[in-house]
Length: 198
Image 1 (tube, one colour):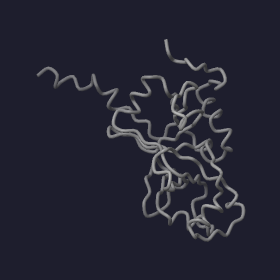
Image 2 (cartoon, one colour; image 1 turned 90 degrees about the vertical axis):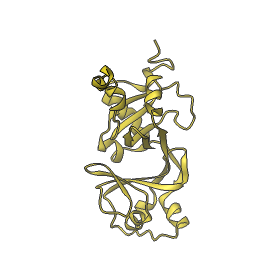
Image 3 (cartoon, helix red, strand yellow; image 1 turned 30 degrees about the horizontal axis):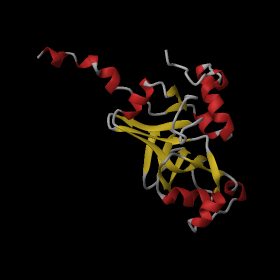
Image 4 (cartoon, helix red, strand yellow; image 1 turned 60 degrees about the vertical axis):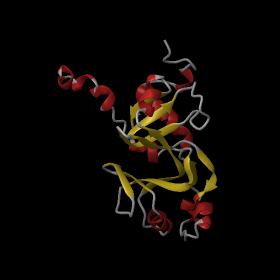
């Protein structure tokens, strides 16, 4: 029965919460879906984790996406924005990371000021100039089952750091990974493929 009083011994594993953190893929990342990626974790619990890759634009503009979806787009500037590869899960579905959270049909509030919406109403509003002030549109997301992300962290597949909104929304795609590394005081080029493996 002594085991009942030692729940705190397992707490660090069970209580890891990387919601609103960046995952920085280590140089030795074997999965090509995540090589040199910066992933923003939108939800992390004992059941698993969900995130969106935020530094891998694909060959698709918002104008082309809106055309495919038969949505109106009033702003030529907005239409030039890139759509991102958000991850290998549900790549035919759109995910909109945005600030502020707003009031949309299906939004996961990541934290105060940042939401992830999966319904078309947010895109319709963006197209007509009434959407969130800052946003990033991706196709697909990144998902991990229960304990999977924790296991990958133990294998040194990722570095983690608390996310900053400015990196998410104010920097160009190619600057996001170096900026996130900068939060850790590390230069990506200085990491070897074997970094973290003693």
